Amino acid sequence: MKRFHARVEVVKLLKEKGLFVETKDNPMQIPICSKSGDLIEPVLKPQWWVNCKPLAEEAIKTFLKRTRSGELLIQPKQSENEWYRWLEGIQDWCISRQLWWGHRCPAYFVRIEGAEQDINDGKNWVVGRTQDEARERAEVIAAGRKFALEQDEDVLDTWFSSGLWPFSIMGWPDKTPDLQNFYPASLLETGWDILFFWVARMVLLGIKLTGQMPFKEVYCHAMIRDAHGRKMS
Image 1 (cartoon, rainbow, N blue to C red):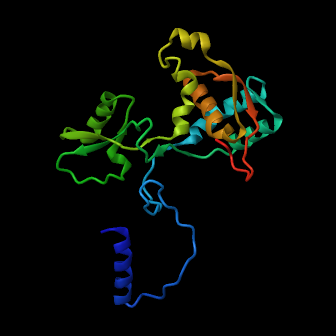
Image 2 (image 1 turned 90 degrees about the vertical axis):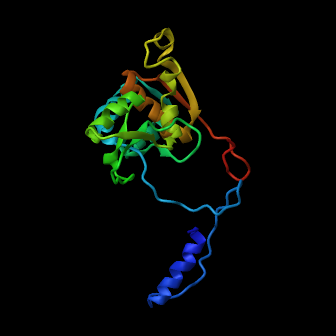
Image 3 (image 1 turned 45 degrees about the vertical axis):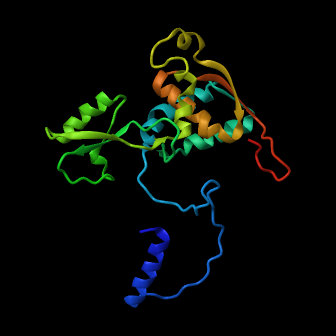
């Protein structure tokens, strides 16, 4: 049933049961899709998350200490203060996006033949660096039963994928000449508004996966805005 038809039916059923109270206007801004002209409404669905607590205990404390020791220089000074504020209050990270472009999440639903399964139950999912690794983990869940792997259609958050950028372009995880000669980099120049969304993620993943700061200095430039204060980017 279409959503607009469903709303009419819900009101109808409420009236039949004597539960309907009233209808009144609720002024609001209604977002419209620029391509299809459809009304855009939020849909709640399960997402993939990174538990940042282990990272907080391991990597975050490490690179906070390493930042304060001067291993990573952040300019100007007010950006450095913002850096500490974000990291010391870090929360779990939603890394899945419902888009058609991006790195696809390496998560697979284990579809067991003849079994009734809830696709929203995490017990029916496995992750793996490769399909072979995911299949090995799925075999444990299937316990000898026939199964098929169905990869999630969600893609990774842009900031997760771009957080791997400093070392992934050098051939990581292989120890390539480029990785040995050009990583870590010397200077990253960026806008202060993505200091946490991008820069912190690069440092976090860099220390976690390579053991090194991805760069030695971060310079945050000012934002260029139009006459109405909107970012021009």
